[in-house]
Image (cartoon, rainbow, N blue to C red; front, top):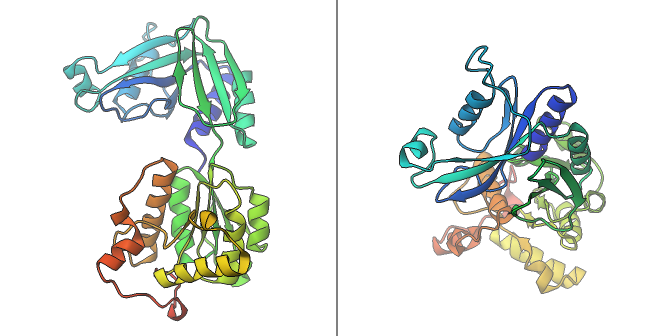
Length: 353
């Protein structure tokens, strides 16, 4: 499943390329609570089709009603206008906030762009699909859009004259090992907008892989990490319980800008891995501090799908710059509860931590 913003922009591009009228809505300001953050986008076609979201659904319905004939038959007054971008606010009064499904006290403002240029959209989509981070600036007087590459992610900026929104390529997840836990985690990652690659040189595991939409490779993990070129929108997770495979990937991943590097395993296994990497591979303590393990947040998970939920929750928290309480760390929580240590060498399915 591709990045939601890329999906919105691709769909909008396709509508415009076939001559259909359409608008692009961007959340530019919020006051109080709001269902979607600033920078969120949606596209609306003249047919009433919608992709993306700026609310829980009610604002989308209102935009469909205002600007298309999907709900109003042949009402000629219902059409996407021409001209420069315009602003629209929702939730100004308590009654309106309730009508549009906004949280108590919530107000949001949208910028509506009418009939964005198809060629400029195509250029933006192509850049994003090639892995580039891009800024799109829209002149408020006439809707003219310009593109530029960006070195770092940035928040939406709205001035008196233009709107600048930064769009990134897909977040990527590299998983080492093609076992059952990996299938659950890959599925959750795809629904969370990650492009997933699975590496496993073991034919017996690769041959049983059943999750569609995932790139599966058979090369050795260290070579795969090098070829993967992890960046700040990438994470690398080792799931085999085999240090001959996991450590190869982790050693390479720790030299990259990946926002998350971690490995499955028990508390004892994690301590042994740290010691092994320091003693035999001269990995610094600073680098080892980036290596997460036992991975996940503590929710008492025992089965592969439960462990996948735990790991995915931690990955998303790190991605979204959320600092979790230390009490949610697996090792600390288990130590405080005196949970018996797992012996990784006796695992049958290789999923306990």
